[in-house]
Length: 107
Image (cartoon, rainbow, N blue to C red; front, side, top):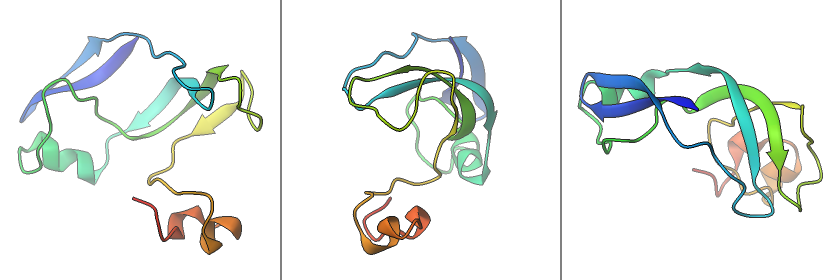
């Protein structure tokens, strides 16, 4: 597959990279159809925020599910999905109320 890859400050390329695979039964592989480069990506591009050469850029994306792990129950192949802009645990009061962007344990 192709991905936007960081090679250094002001040096990003669209490179061929290995296809993702299911590693855990809760994993999902999605084919990215659209991705955005946001302000936090620009810090790395400008050399202000540290990234390692080879890191992939663009953490805000949408796509189609290609494959699901054995324990995935709520989505299936062909579903349209988006990535969250942060990680939530799904267990805190806010997550249980349907507000994962307010997760007290999120990153």
